[in-house]
Length: 393
Image 1 (cartoon, rainbow, N blue to C red):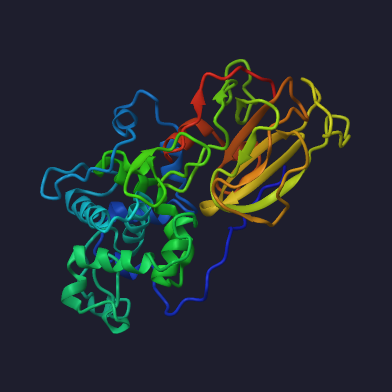
Image 2: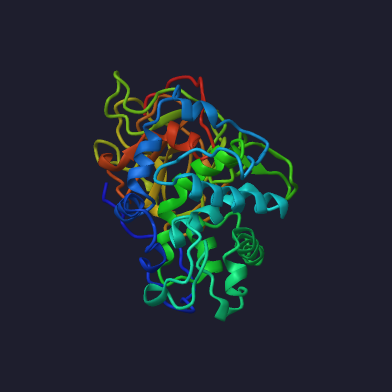
């Protein structure tokens, strides 16, 4: 299959230029090296998270908590390039969000934005190196009405102003992170925020009792695990169906299996795992070049049957194979996280009803871009359940 490299969505023109390096002038050299070289949604960070062991201390500690925020004056962990000072600023951002009853998704957006704007450092005016009159964690400008320079160098005040503006953004909880952040910041480089999402999720999980693995319920403050199709995790991701994973990713018996098989009855609704743009929606030819997707397939037939590919923020692509009939979405449609895109079937190279689900990084739809969906979805608070009946794609 061909590679996909374009980004999804569009944003309004910026109100002012923003030099991406100016706000980071005082950041640590190591932090700069990581932030400038990951690209897209953060290829390095995503690879590390996706390959994390189920039994690692980090994975074990990030449960689905109730959003309890740590003492901002207590001992804080180091995560990635961010030491105690930066993590304390992140904790303040989260604490203010909780006080304002902002759902955890907002905390992730705010932390990721501050990572891009200041590397979580409370920057003063940098003189000739300054981006206009920008100061503080979010590089907000006094001349644009955000507050006085002194106010904007108070991390709690700056976070509060960010959240107040975020609340005015329509559907901000289901927008891609980069879109929601851009509507607040109006940066000249709107795609830059996405690359920080993976580590921002990790930081919110560590500082707020796994809150980035929780979903807001009916706009209330109560939180629960994102374990149903209708639930969208604070990261903006949702499990495509509720069935259990049977055949795994690149197993010893199936080394060329680029996704996972999730067993489910025919007709089970399949939902988009995150907001994005449909880049493929069609019948995949079988090994003999036939477009025979309206009948059940069989092992060795070849092809995905009816399938959909969706391009998400950060050049992440998800794939949904073996649908029972033509998908409910078409190429170039914009879809929201949790939106129904089709139904489980057994078309193509299949021995029984199931969803074959793939995740690809860096806009690469080929096998080279494929990554294991199980840890990828787990780290986004939308875990795929184990224990399904194995099926052959």
